Image: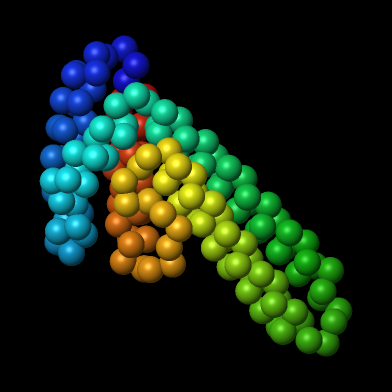
Length: 145
């Protein structure tokens, strides 16, 4: 989107927002207030947030692959232990904790980048809204970057 003027970017983002809002469920749609939509568009104008979200996506994919590979390796190593199920349950609990840390890091990064409604939270409703905000950003990246 760098090739467009700031005003053209704003218009494109407003159009994308209108289209996007039609795709979200009614409960989440009500959370997308005019203030949130305008703040989100403003936070995206300089393009920095797009680069940050793209990096976070790559980093998350890499970390998830690493967690999966480590789990598979531990599964092979533990095949002979009598309490395999319990050991794997503990490994899975640790993986979930790691994923929670990743979410918190991403929330913090996006908060510091000025993306509205981002802060560290475990509240499911807030996380759903944050996920929809990221989905909007990814939609714009996929269409215009």
